[in-house]
Image (cartoon, rainbow, N blue to C red; front, side, top):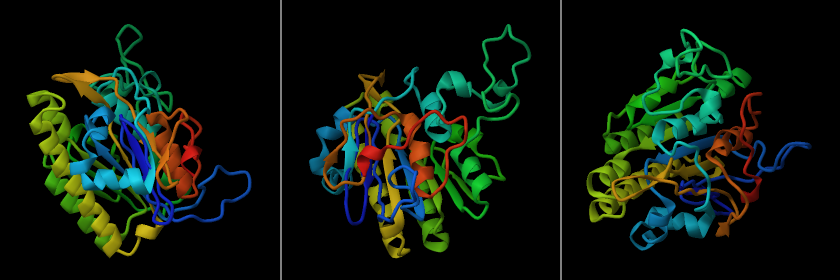
Length: 309
């Protein structure tokens, strides 16, 4: 998968899980990782199923994605979690826990699975506490700063399992309508300028399963998502918060033929910087929290991606 970071002043990007980040640089407090409290707003934009190898070949007709290679930090060699399917990896990004520690080890996971009836069933309670969903980055943010405004706009409805009403201020469930997902988060940005945002697009993955990874239909879906990300950027500009926003764009996995594969990529803020150090999707939540000046919770397993700074 790929990952890109982008800063208004200095820019870079990452790999096959894609991540882009926009950040205005601020002085970091002593004994904190680089990038600490460097942004007032952070956004993770997820492009389900967009393998980095397919992005590398297509930036000429994907102008928004191409912009990150020039203006942000990037890597197309970030690692996802096994199994390389959606739920364990979106769970890893949102909680910074591996599947064995979150208990989310397949796409059929539901919150009731956090309370296994006994040890004979093939279910694992999350290490953050049995009977509750794994602790998310938005709960972690709210616990440290209740004033944090959190907005979530998703195409794949499974992600709603990780949204608790007391931790998210705005939730839009697009139910496979990527255009509506982009329109609703853009409108909320203009009205409320949230601090912590999560956006999920599903159409690229749908096209891969239906027509094959790398097919013309796959790239048509990628073109649409490219335009949706441009729409979000336009909202950040109009809301006058783009200089204070870290934007991370990523995928959960890639694919091959009509199924999933192990294609990984990841994020940064040095302009045109290719991140060569190891990056995992476990690192995204700690990196976003760090930019807001917040600490990871004690269970989070990822690290701040300092190589992008």
